[in-house]
Structure formats: structure tokens, C-alpha cells
Length: 343
Image (cartoon, rainbow, N blue to C red; front, side):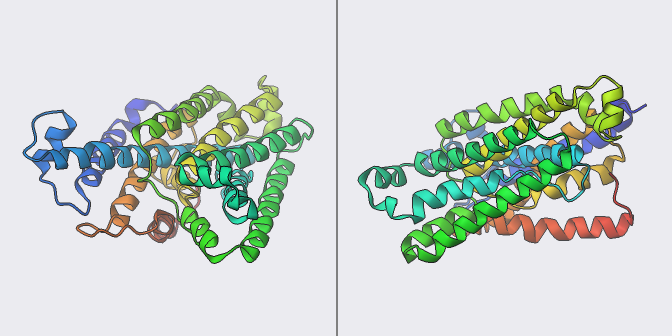
């Protein structure tokens, strides 16, 4: 029987690595700030330059916290989808949530509606893209949950989610084809993903659906463990299949949808982190996997963001590109080294 005691050293090592990546992320940027000044800024102690404290508290700390929320949220939502569908290739966006968010943003940015004064006001504010992405995600979520209540086959939900994603992507392609260059560029920049655009107010709102999604995922731990052995087995143990499936979809949608709405689409993390976690812990017990996935997802996201920052440079690379370029080779190497995909 698995116990936290058997993984104590592993969790301790991962926790220390998490703290190191967190402080390393805060210390990197276009402005070179001494480590002492960073530490003093975090504990609200006097700093020799007020500009240093402003940079750390108003920009670097929210960005690091955003990376933690995004990494852990995508990792957990990917784990939920892989377990629900019993498919190692399932990720947090297989239900079409990201595609729905992309379509919402595309309708706002790329259509002729963007010339109206109301829409121009939305685009000028920080909340315009967030609202558009949220509406797009909610529409897809409503449709998928409606379908989930009508069908008995879980794989049918996966296929339907993928089809909704294809429909949304096709509509975005059509809108992109006819869109003016300036509006198309704005949409492309949103698609790159960004962790550094959230203020403390936006971050606090972002945490609400995040906490709800995590709470539902924790509540579903027993159902998740039984789903690994098949729905018939889960049903024989008294698990309400439809209810559990609905809750898992809601948790994934809250996490993946809010992340896409606030930071843009971010690839790879949700697909790969659950596999990396299983290869390290050699367990299928979600009691441990949820915590481990959250920690490793946060670590990987902090590392990718640190690389994207280009230390001592004013340029920041697209985080969406870095997560794929850095993360995919790691998973390939781990799978070749282990020679077996644990699931």
C-alpha cells in the first residue's frame, strides 16, 4: 500500500527544487537586481532602490505565481483527462476548451465587429481578451457537459470534444484568412501565450476558478483511482459513473479554461507532466499523483519561463514555444530511458 512515508525523500527533493526554481525565476529579468534586494522586497524590508522593489513585487512575483498556477493547473487537468479516458495521449485541451477560447478571441479580434466602439474599448482594456476567451470556453464546456449527460460511452465524449476543437480551429482559420494584417498579428501574439501580463487584481480573480478546479479534483480522487481499472469495475464499487465523469470534466474545464483565458494557450505541459510524474513515482494512486503533478508542473513552468525571459535582455520569447521546445525532448529521453510508458 502506498504511503507518503515511502515517497518522503522524493517529495522533499522536489519541494527543494521547486523553491530553487521559484527564487531563480524571480531573480532573472532585464534588470539585474541583487539577491539581497530581492529577498528584502519579498519580506517588505528596506531596499536601497525603490525601483527594484517595484519590479519584484509588481512584475516578477505575480509572473512567478502565475507560472505556478499555470503549471500545476495544466498538469492536474492533463492527469484528469488521461485517467478519465485511459489514454496516454489525452491532454487538458482534448475537450475543445482551448479551441473554444481561441475562437472567442478570434471573433473579438479578427472580425469586422472589432471596428465598433464597444469592441475597441474591450480590446483597449486588459479584460477584453479574458472575457472573450472565457465566453468561448464556457460555450464549449456547456456543449460538452450536455453531451456527457446524454451518452454512456466515455470515449464518445473524447471524440466529440476533439470534433468541437476541429470545428473551432476551422472557424478561426477562416476568420484569419479574411482578417486585416494588424488584427491577425494581435491574435497571433495572444496565441504565443504570456505569463507576465497579470496584475495582482487579475491574479486574484484567476485563483478563484483555479481553487474550485483543484478542490473538485481532490474530491474525485477515489473515483479517479477506480477509473483506472475500467468503468465496470468502478461501478461495481459503488462509484456513480455519470456524476464522477461530470465532475472531472468540470474540474478540467475550470482549470484549462481559466488558464487559457488569462494566459493564452500553453502547449505540452498538461500532456507531458503526468507522464514525467508517473516515471518518477511509479504509482497510479492519485492521492500522490495530484500533489506530485502540481509540484512538477510548477517546476517545469518556472524553468520554461526563466528560459523565455532571456536573462539580462529586454526580450521575452513566446512561452508557448519554450514549453514545447524544452519539454518534449525531456519526455522523449525519459521514455527511451525507461522503455515503458507507465499508465
